[in-house]
Length: 339
Figure 1 (cartoon, rainbow, N blue to C red):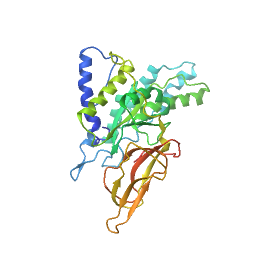
Figure 2: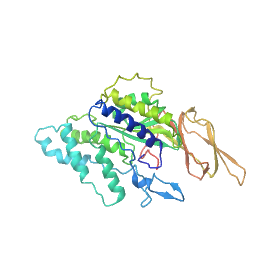
Figure 3: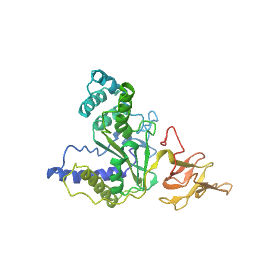
Figure 4: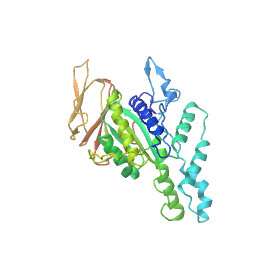
């Protein structure tokens, strides 16, 4: 719950905590697993007119999951002398440099301090899971294209309806600050030496969207926690029987193919019962009723694709995004994430 008003991840973390404590007591954990049960105390403390507001920092309006530091330039500069001397820094050496660089990040505001704290917990990890949810949604994932092969088993185990992939989504979200760092370092190495990168994609980071904000119950949370533990077992971090791998529900789709549906007018939003279903280009997925004029405006999908998320409020304003459809073709560019 880096977005502090998204509760499903808090309940999943509650169940993970209990399971991991039992596994630790039985000495069945290999390595170190860091569980952050509540990632955003700043956002958790924000209230306005009795409602929790945890997506944006009220002081400056910034999204809590944007603008994380890209440390790749600083790290490469610190390693350049060793590289120029003909030595290849190991993954461990790069991680040590990451820890040192992240320790120097600014802390002159609550938000900057929070970002530094969270990044230092994750910057040297092999795996990073960032648990979120949408307004109303089916379970879906966001991850970087280079690490999809490592994430695919998690998508299978969670029963994710779709995974949305991008080289870079824009905005520097938390997961990409951890995983895309290695891609950027490799790019810098190739530009500097003319040789292929000596480093693997050493951090697999994924954002898990745990359905919608009201999908909070023990049955779902326990199921999701078990799936995450099964993935960690698959990765060799937990001593347990290897999980049976279910089929992938559908192949991943480009984040550049995820198209928002916008309403041209305000009014009462009436969704068609299509969440989690495939829709066609031009198909009506919702309508907006103007209560004064009595007019109805149909809102249609711009692409063939999966209707995977939609707005939970039912009184909307003109220009508002009311749903997201994951198409097969990349048709967007620039910043691909919502505000």
